[in-house]
Amino acid sequence: MSNLDIDAAAFISSAAKHLPPSDVWCILYLSLRHFLKSDVAIIDEQSLLTAMKPPVCVIYLYHSYESHRLTECGSFPGKYLTGQSSGQ
View 1 (spheres, rainbow, N blue to C red):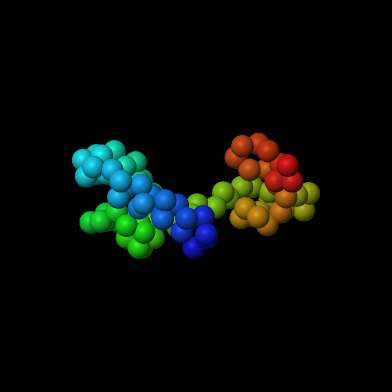
View 2 (view 1 turned 135 degrees about the vertical axis):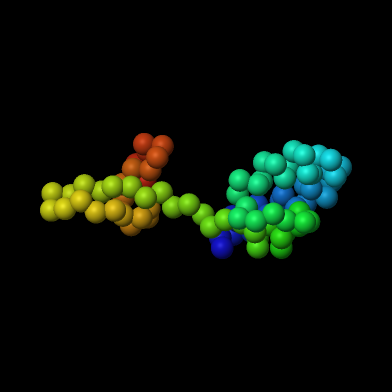
């Protein structure tokens, strides 16, 4: 789990403490559900980290003259979905 995941969970749980329950469950939770592998009873840092889906790594096709092979992101300086070179 990355620091970004931990920081995001901390920020979301802190924001939830300052919102009325109706906003937490009707707005915030509905936005979060896509990123969770299971429902949570309480929106706190530990619950979010436990229920969070693993990050999706962009898998892209790297064409070389010798062969075609699937390479996970970070393995070579290719292009990401944005079309930007990883060196930029």
